[in-house]
Length: 132
Image (cartoon, rainbow, N blue to C red; front, side, top):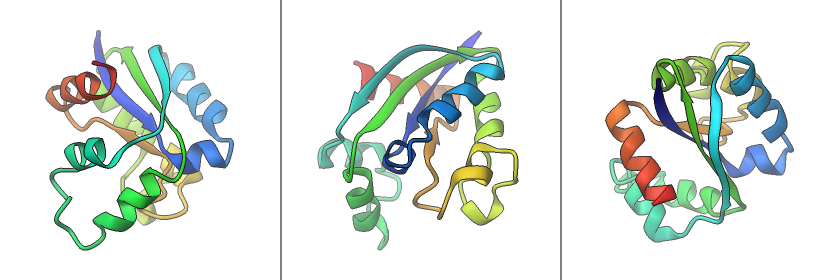
């Protein structure tokens, strides 16, 4: 068993997709062991997106991520990081296949409804960042 960090982004909450997304996670056999609603602050976002905070598109991303609440989750199950990345679909909205969360619900690469850790190491860092 492993665990990963998953975040439903503001557009998922605003569009009332949380239930549908959680149903997909659970129907795949994963267990949400913790969940919390958060309003993100600039300092946390700069830390979370440190790898892209110098990019020209970052201010728009930061504004979007602060546009409403997000739901942070710890998800557990067999091969949780890779398994969740598979059901989430590609980050780039135009590359996300139908049947994946992003393929079915994303409206752009920025507004792609969900974030998931990209490695077990980053999962632990992100879980600590958002859950302490």
